[in-house]
Image 1 (cartoon, rainbow, N blue to C red):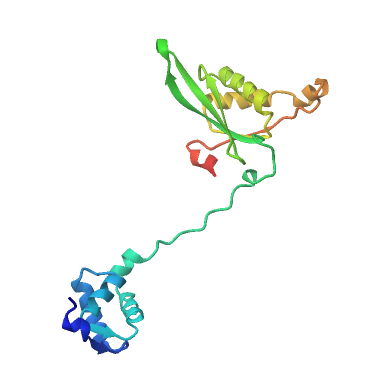
Image 2 (cartoon, rainbow, N blue to C red; image 1 turned 90 degrees about the vertical axis):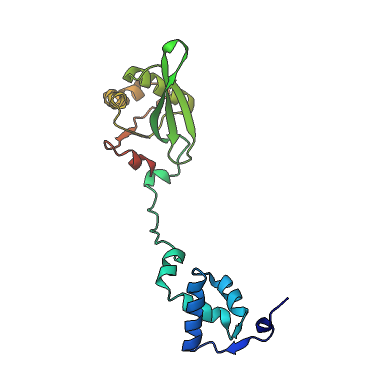
Length: 203
């Protein structure tokens, strides 16, 4: 049953020092209760005019409560790099890295070369039997045969990856294009990420 105080509450004004002190006291006594809970507690004995607005105004002055209720400051996200928003074909701008090793039967090991499209986030996987530059180049040839030649390639500073760009840069792509029946073979840019800067390839 409702108490007599609930049936016949004391009517209080919305703007008065005594009312503000009353709200503060009840707020502290009830473990810094939230807005709705504090309104229900006060309603058991009092009828404050414009109660919700009044209580919210008083609670906004509690620094301790503000620390837990205010949203953290967020910084706007940086714009995506130009190579992430270009209008290009799938796998035209790629990045790659290795995962592993995978332990196979007989004690041998294998690694997975992960090729990702920088624009569409498509993924292509190739299996490597070793971490040599030659093994990676074979994987890269298979990738190109299946997905086409990329125009921009991002990779880290793995020794096998560094060896591959050095080899690929020594190729005379102009001469190959002249003697190729397709005549559409072009070179591509290889961008090495800074040492220890793996995150820079995730922009």
